[in-house]
Length: 66
Image 1 (cartoon, rainbow, N blue to C red):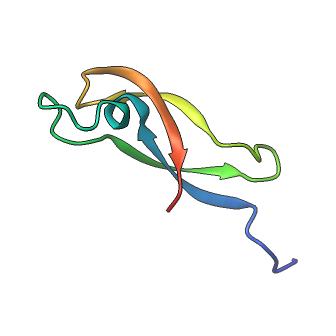
Image 2 (spheres, rainbow, N blue to C red):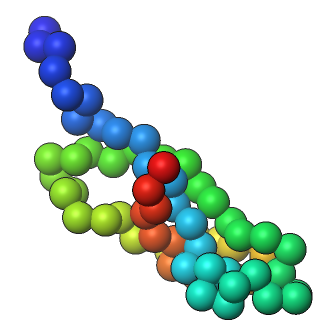
């Protein structure tokens, strides 16, 4: 088995609406999820609809840098 660059990397998804609102007064923070993605199949940034407990709705969570 080849020991090279890890194909499946760990990525962090962060709520885009919480970040866009600059942690407004109603929001206590920002929602983050940790997941994996295959870098060969999806070289672009990952965006998924996940539930944000701070916004109380499903929003788009985008990949951020570590």
